[in-house]
Length: 102
Image 1 (tube, rainbow, N blue to C red):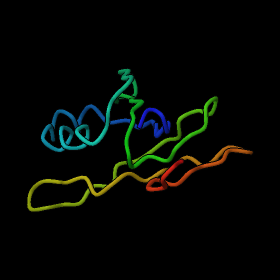
Image 2: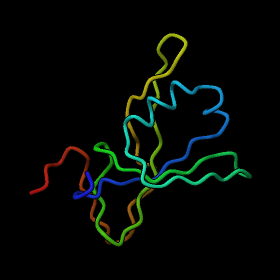
Image 3: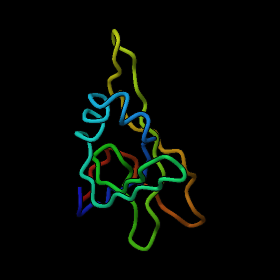
């Protein structure tokens, strides 16, 4: 994951952490957090993380934004996967998740 630079950015609202800690634990279990920063005025924690489901990003390119896709199961939510929400930058080559790099 590190060598292929499968890195991304996402945020979690503080109220979601307070109200749904089990779902947050499940979400964070799918990533390796390398940086986290609380932005209290915005009421969220911003993360930079590695994940096999993230696209490979070339060096010197900012990590793209992702959104967790959650599915309701009974009275809780489970992580379905990650959806890239930031568009590629000009000249950026993206290697889709699941591609084997040689």
